Length: 189
Image (spheres, rainbow, N blue to C red):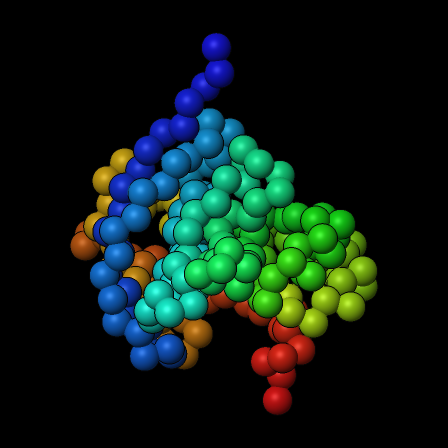
């Protein structure tokens, strides 16, 4: 008998001063049996950092990456089904990213393991042709602290200012400073 997903519900109160985005979102996450609290919370963080201000370009949704290898952790599709933003979590291989890059307008990766520098040094040179890719590292200590906030039902306040993120459940707070490892060409000026 196959193991089933565990359902988590989160209410996010987002105050992203960097993007002038202030919104509340209720989300449901299906946690794959092999997924850790840490990875699930990084998916939730990626959602909070990239949720669009409105649905004019489509909505940001949790995809089935652990169930379907052709899907990312999250994606934003426009109203025609074209992928606007592909978001992977973890340490995808270069072949996966090279395949995803042409399928979307923008791709992002959030890596959170202490082995991120080793992973990144092994694939960075292979991704130079991808001009729509952003790669972020979340320090392992920060992602583990974020995992400690995981609960089946969560009410989280997410505040973003000057690139720093604070996530709080009302009792505990975690400060996260994503480090950019690669910036897409279109955003460099």
